[in-house]
Image 1 (cartoon, rainbow, N blue to C red):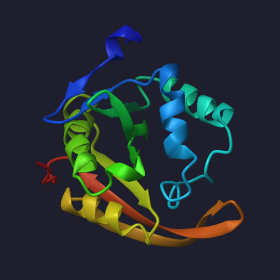
Image 2: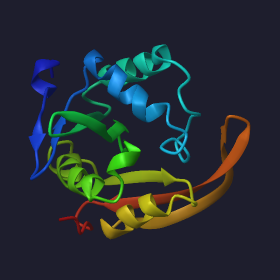
Image 3: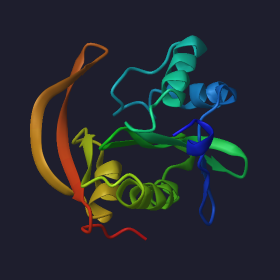
Length: 176
């Protein structure tokens, strides 16, 4: 599959999900440098745009056989990302001023559809900090089930955090 063949855009009622471009670096830096938005992420907040540049470049470099990640836009503004950086693990982050409006759930639906129908995944997995109640609610609401827990799984900026592991099997979901 060529890069142009994987340049998928998905439109939902309020959102556009599209591939990343280097033009997205400033918008993502606004998200990834925000300590509140990054509170439960797997890295500390980004200190400079060079770090965000590398992050966007890695998002763009995902091999079509190993993952599919989307920029989330609302009315032409980048508000976050949602996708499978590496099959079968899903991840998402949204700009803090968009929290609580249902955008993550709206973006999750078509990405899960593609994970199962286009990519043929048997399941989608998530690793969530147990303190991240909003993400746990979103995933449980989509049909994900807890499959395990572990302590001290991520050392982020010198502080340990734990993990809740969740799995959604094909045919098990309740998104929409």
